[in-house]
Image (cartoon, rainbow, N blue to C red; front, side, top):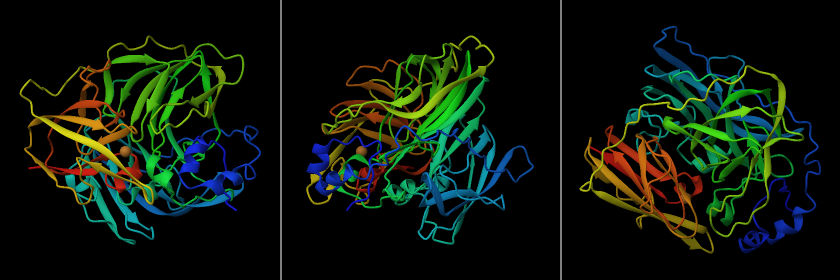
Length: 484
Ligand SMILES: [Cu+2]
């Protein structure tokens, strides 16, 4: 009998049935944990920063190790995971998420990386503009074998919220726990009572609390939907917020394929930034969609304590394939604590806008993201009719600008990520987006629609672009851009 458990399962039974899991469904009812909603909610742990071993204030130098570790996703049950740890702390153990890398704009960062995993790996610094040899993709470096080391070196150029993760066999390695937050400081100060980095994930667990490593066709199609939702590696956590005050939340979606659509009932998100840092003009929203790989930076004001239970929730977003609404799921309980400092006036301008210059003669380069259903293997994925690694690299000239017109086929959305440089969204089906001039490195391409992006080619090297549903990328939805 399957021992997979069902905690936050939101895959419609019709689809699961269609996708060859009839036995699982019969078993679901008897493997429930049975304590949903009753567990003692623990305060979310804060991220432990990597120790800077270099006294020079212009250099952040750290030792990062990836190794097997254990993680208690479910109470009293240990899962075998792969995790990052700080090699500069003699007593460090691997954690999920891994230790946070922090640096300031203009600093040189040196990461002495050591692979203690039983498999080759690399480290990709998602969103950072780095020299090509330090990007950590399969197009820019050789894999780091078990027992091997690699020194990553780059100067951080942009303040913002980023993350790091492997770029080899990512569907397995990220799912096993290899991901961590990365913050580059250097923004103008925004007055808040507290700042948090909430790392959103899901994980597919068996009733034993171990990772379910079986991959079925549905996992390939949707990006391994987990049955347990995690914030900072913890299920059903709790945060205490200062009453009458304001916090800054950085948010990243590190899930293989889950879309997070956030809501905090009775509160609004004041969005001040996303992938490439602060936005020129903030905006307010009741719900916040975060596709895999994306980051958002929001202010939340806690003015009126709710009468009852308050939770940051994940609500339905229609990403395609007739997935049905499972109802809201609590991600983390929010508790009003003692009064904090009253919030200062909200900033209205955060950054001077800058943009990629495009005109009517700017070349348009089309990309079609396509899913090919395969009843045996689930699906394969293509960009412009080609499957990585059999893709034809695109060659372009450094400094030139092009418009990328990206179209997703009608079945489902795909979050599109470009390494090495930011881009700007010009239009969706010809209509400019309501929020403009923010720099992105990952953007959701809604199914059946066309996005136009402005991309200026720099720096030189071979850069990957791909869907950030990791199973899609690994099964073909990935290409290479060569800037000469
Ligand atoms: Cu995709």
